[in-house]
Image (cartoon, rainbow, N blue to C red; front, side, top):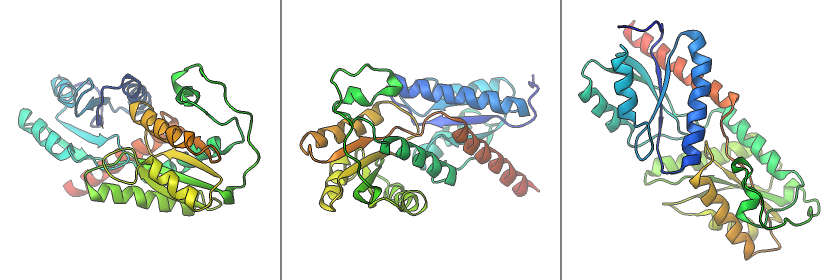
Length: 287
């Protein structure tokens, strides 16, 4: 029996990992979208491609069982997911009546860049410099085990560099997109800073230490590492760990670690716009 929702449901798709923190934040964001869109008669569900639960297949089966045979599938990602087309094709094989419209990835939306600018500003504030990984885990509410240093001397933005860190991919186009975001971010929000360099957590160079080293050689006195990531979790901790390990060998360089974009209303606005855009494109094709 059809449930009383007027619009096709929104299915948010996550990459999936074994990290509980990232899964919890993904779940909170799905709940935020559910509260926002159910007011306009649209159901929201979420599923992962791998590793975490609920899996994409479970979420699709649940929606179909409740009478939905058309949905908007939107990768909750800053770049395209290579596995997405094959995963949705498999779901259509499992559910022959299923139709879906594709929602674009989130980045580099101007509002995403603005959120990155907020995280940069927070990290750039003259606060005590972190000395251990535990010192930069406010989202995980971990009590620092090593005292931080006293606030450092004032350093101008012109002496401060930024390293924008993406996940890293085997897809050259996805990596090139992160470089493009770095340039857009520099020209639109970080033009007072010395430079915005690009680095990656894994898979492809340069890594975080490589990005930091380039900034040091350019003469930066402070470097702010800005993760180009949606949610906290293991990937973020890897960024922080690599930055702090490099900093341990370069004590004269003030290295700051910004937080991820995170679950917030502005990010929800971007997702809702992607959802509405997908619906409008589908209506235009069918007209």
